[in-house]
Image 1 (spheres, one colour):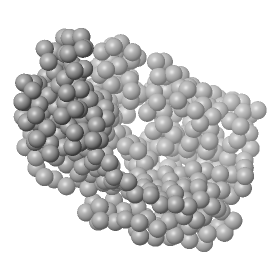
Image 2 (cartoon, rainbow, N blue to C red):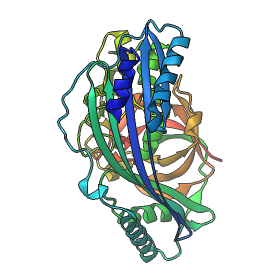
Image 3 (cartoon, helix red, strand yellow):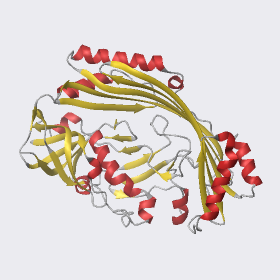
Image 4 (spheres, rainbow, N blue to C red):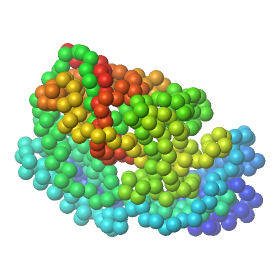
Length: 434
């Protein structure tokens, strides 16, 4: 079908174009009160057409693929109505030859409702065997398979498939003690993760509100991922840099973090959740150094913004059939240190260990300032957990704490999204309690 669409575009006299085809199949199981509430399975496919006529860009999309002529005609019509975009150079012309590498788990792609149901039952069994008073308040399991095809006027002609599965749950010990958990992998999930979830919930039973003070901060990878995502990762987007919206626009090749901080964007290592052979414009995947020993080394680019700066795309284009490409990270990895979690928690006389935050969307990405509620956190004294906190906030500046690193954990933890991070111990932040 996509070849027919290309033939029609050429017949219309369009010399610059891009066709993006996407099909996705999702199987979803929703859980409620220790039981399966309902199941659903859906399939959708669609096309997105981009054309350029005399530097005027047009885009249209549809799920009615049989009537692709209407979609193409709409893109052409929009192009003619738009103003010239002098910054547009061309669609991706970095041709690659597909290696046909498989970036999904062959076992997972064949699994369906029976696998999901068994996982759920095993998860609940482990929870109940550990603590019979804990209930699964709500949750869900989703398996998603995606196929994409990209053809453009510059000679790109590529196809790939991906598959992942996601489980999320809210466990409840009492009305005052509930926690949410989630994991997303491209391999089969293991219900034994329930043991860790139960342990974390039980550790939150004894709660207290600490006195307001300045205190050393340990960030679990889940909390660190939230801060990175809200404050830092959007700031290295070339679109933000070129539009002068980023705090980092004049910081390239300058120190922004502690010398022990090294961060890369890795879209090529096969076992990572968002790895793939090429991005959503057909640019081959790669590793991009973002921060090296505290120094900002690169911004992230799609083809459009890379052409403006006369650099190569970092294979960071992300889209669906219904949208034009935007810049996005894939797998963000932070280099580990040497200390175990236990040793880090023994590294200060008193500290707060924060695992989950509330309201990270309120953090100021233009300055790095934050004042956030602690959803899951504990006070430690000389390495001993004293109590879980409630009615507590932490306040500080992200760039300050990332320059005030005291220790880095020796293990990368996948947080469920695309981040693989160690725990970190920082200097003091404001703890707001009583």
